[in-house]
Every structure is written in structure tokens, then in C-alpha cells.
Length: 123
Image 1 (spheres, rainbow, N blue to C red):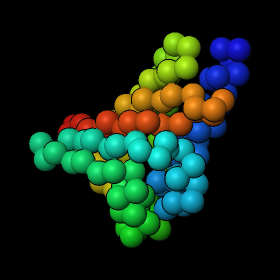
Image 2: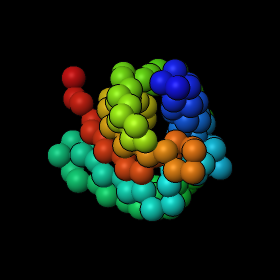
Image 3: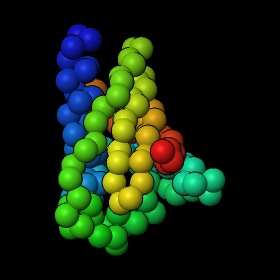
Image 4: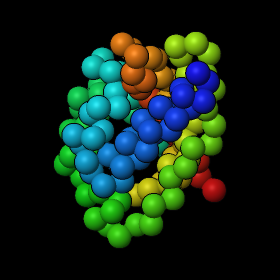
């Protein structure tokens, strides 16, 4: 059961990565619950968007792929307890060194992102 959950979450995260790297918003939409929120800290500037506004932003920007960036996104860790999970990601893209913390919940037998927290770590 635990390994099944790991595989399902890894598939969700791969869809998330493909959505943000290639600008595939149809793919990205399937990763989030309908009322998810996105909170971030970008160089000390606070960032907040609803999932709909976030997906619209991804839709209207040039994707990392369009900008000829190399895909370097990775899963740092996954922690699962029952129907909840926390996933830490490294998401370097668009000139930023992002780290995401995604809160997941298993809704109707399917893992969904219910909250996204992220920050840019300046090296």
C-alpha cells in the first residue's frame, strides 16, 4: 500500500513538473484540488494566488522549455501519513532556485495538491 502511494505521488509530481516546465496547463490543472492556494516568498516579496490565477500565470508566460532551459527539477522527499502527504521539491527554473513544499490529500482515491508553498533560495 505504501509503495502504491509513493508511485501515485511520483506520477502526480511528474505531471506537475511537466505542467510547469512545458507550460502544459491542462496537465497542471489535474494536479491541484479546485480550491488550492499558492503562497510564496520570492526574494522577500510575498506571493499569493488561487490555483486558477496561478494556472493562468503559467499559461501566459514563456515556459522554461520555450526558453531552452535544461530540466533540473527533482523530488527531495515524500512523507506520507494515511491520506495526507508532504512533498519537498527542488524546482530551478526561470532564473530562480525554487523549493516547493506541496501538501497533498487523497481525495476520492486520487492524490491532489491542496496547498503549495515555495521560496527562492539565493545562493
